[in-house]
Image (cartoon, rainbow, N blue to C red; front, side, top):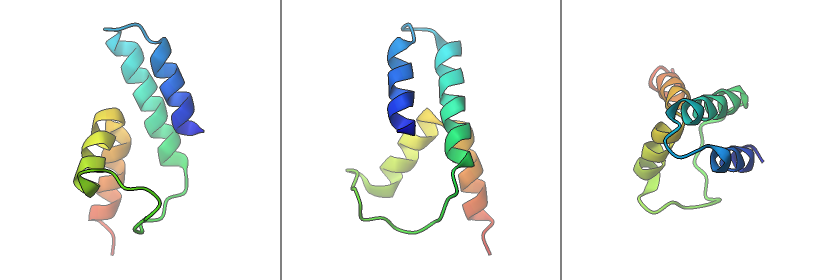
Length: 77
């Protein structure tokens, strides 16, 4: 549902409107960041290119969230 709402919002943004696109991506990042996370492998869906491809997509679409999660993972005990 969160991603569907984000994608619908992206469709309403005029091409080239960097500010609106960035604001939308930041909202997605904040929403995803607020969701309780657990760092385990999933077999629910595969992405061609594996986790590296997922990281690339996540960083492109929600850079603040991606950086936050990367920081959490890098500093796990």
